[in-house]
Image (tube, rainbow, N blue to C red):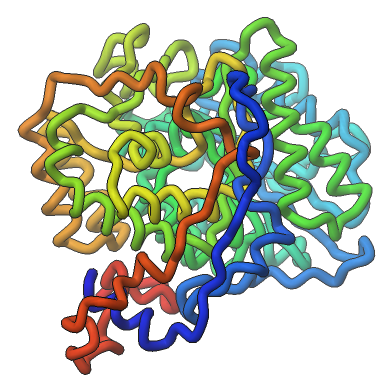
Length: 489
């Protein structure tokens, strides 16, 4: 890590300090409802050339862009038990979808679809949503396995080949089980079959499409590990850090906004999507929700800051269990419901990055807080979710079986072996949970009022002469990861 920081120092000519407004009062904060760093402020922050990646999706502008939205709709028990997928499809059909926008849906993974839209349960199908109805465009698939990477890859390739566009969206619909157990529950497959993060990475890479946004209408998938795994394949991600209610996303508003202006900037569109979900869930008598728009450009900065913080504060992290207390309920993945009491979900190893940074005082914590504020472009949550801030990291407190699964998935997705080995220290466990109750209201007043006066020059430790003596700078990166090619050393 020291060599990396020295390398950055060599190529760094100047770094500007990002400044946000101080809080104006002492009143308790509302749930955070704005971006950590507004888009126009990002240009004021200068990092080394290869540390912050340029956006890869280039828009024509002026509403001239074409858009293809690919929705991988694995209905599972959410559809067979409550027609949840059908409800969200109806929200899509309520939108006035432009001819410039192709909304493509692959239906699979459930034993019983609602009869309302005529979707078959004995085979997978592909539909196009337009003019208030679903039009069947491919009925030749047979019964596909929603948890197989090749199924997702084929859907991506088919969509791009038949509906080429200027910008692409890939949305996952179903259960989420976190960055270790992954996405999806196919009722035609064994209960322990999921699409893991390393398999998602492979499927998206093999699909050959670069996405403006990859989003997941799923539980507990907003993790540093997933964002790093998909770094090379999208500009933004939209993810939930906690369990979603049965209502999930609200689809009508953001599809209308995209259709009205197909060149709408992604941060603006993401804000609409996030806010609509939160407002819809709150309107439905207590639907719990938390959702974040993650800017993938800053994953190198964030990962570097996290590892620097984690290694420097190892004793503190091991001394208490920093997993956040979260609720499960009906939308919890069947694997998770079987493993734990669904009414008390404190052991999903969801550790909110900003919460830990705010609760472990150290110079590294300041750098980590500043990095999170760059990576979380926008975040909002319902009032019962105050305490989470948008993005988590996985620390496997006291669970060797979970760590074994973590090792397979994280290594498969390319995480550095030394870091994965270091995570094994957490399997010794700690029964003493950290009490997060007062931290949010007293120590951190939400993204709007976050004081980011961190000096990135200090983070680079210019005064350590050892960093200047090693001539092997080109061989070092923050993750032993070839960020350009999408494969690891």
